[in-house]
Length: 387
Image (cartoon, rainbow, N blue to C red; front, side, top):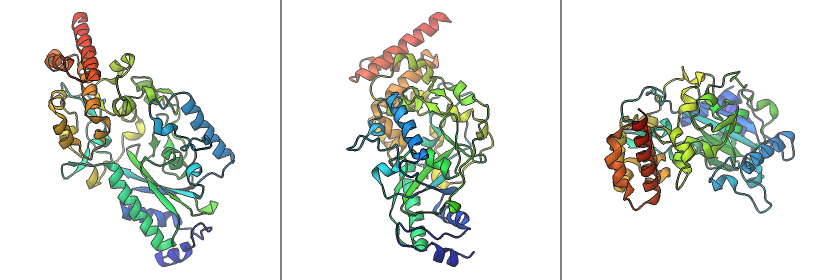
């Protein structure tokens, strides 16, 4: 079917059942690639009260009730009737009928966090190492522009429809719709996995009023984790309590990015050298062994942020932190949280070369940093005494 015929078949008033050609999947894929994505699919928003809807709502409610969201209050937000807004897209947007999910590859092909690192190296999560022309890249802004471009292309072909574009910030759980839309299955580490691209994927969604007939929806991705539990076994803080069950309050990514104040002492040794985020459960995943390296110019790794030296990171003042990470996801940890994380990584390094820095931080006006430094000094002293 030609693009003209596809466009004619797609044209419709907002919210009216779409008359979509059988080649719609390739049609959407072509438009998504034109906008800068490697994958795209479409799923129906579950009907309110359907078994699918009730199941997803129950899962999310139980996860929140278990305290697994930690201090991430935005995940716990409820509407005026008490419904969790992220339990279903129709809680906030009752007009949503379908969800377009797009994926971008950010696999840099650089060393992994589980590889033998250079002495004194910290770790910044792979997705936050990226940039363009040597400058940091905020994937939220980069991908939002691409989603908006895709929406424009779709409206040009299909006519107007109501929609919203989101990158991590929408009232939904992206990986659920990524599975429904055939992008990938939810791995036992809770990441979206694609059998060819692995899990190094940024996800973006377009909520739409398009009422797409069942035969034109994407086929949900099959679960291909099998009996493998490498991600669960490898998690240093036991955040993966069961397959596809994460206690985010124990996750290193949560602890080093979202957690404010002191990190529980019993979890500090498990953080290892991670100073922002964590890639361990993805690095050990067999599906990532052959994941292709991204050719996306906006997600090129900044070499200095691959296995960055802890002493170099510790030398940064707040202005230097801003210069290096303005526009980067790393800014979410804030300067105070970043230094707290560095102190803990120094304590886990086993190297007493960091003692002068840590002793200086004991006198810092930030009590959280002083606490982390005190713990790190004690850990290094204990390590030496036991050697």
